[in-house]
Length: 201
Ligand SMILES: [Zn+2]
Image: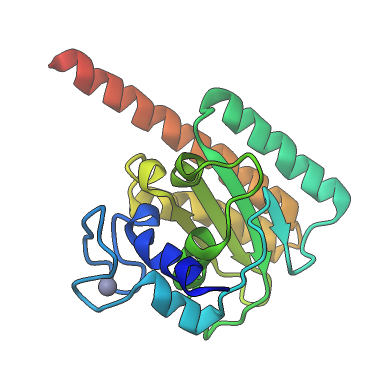
């Protein structure tokens, strides 16, 4: 990777985050690094390298889902995207272990992974990345800048709780499907709230 490409992700630092993935400080949209702790896209590359895998709609590095399970997840994503077509889901299973911070890893994937053919920078800003660590069972959500305003961290936490039981019972596909359904319900109520606010003005 040449120097110019290396500059790419630090420039995009704030796109995937309203808050710093390392210390949760609020960030300005054009921030190239966090004023609070100094974290940047470049730092994430020091941690995880400069060649992430392509961020496919379903990226199963951990071999967590079989073909049937992947189809179930794809169908649920389609249902979601029919209702909220601007949102781009990325569902990713990794095997990292508990010493790795999933939010930092998700940030790295979202920012350093090159755009897919046909994917625009704006698409990436509307992306929501679900990460499941098949080793630890931990999960996290990383949202692009435009997707981030929809749900609070607490709401995403609620949606992620849906994963725990089916995952522990050996149904990793059902876990994602239930998570997506809960996320859709939360988006529905966020959408209704924002419409109400608009009509109240
Ligand atoms: Zn920070």
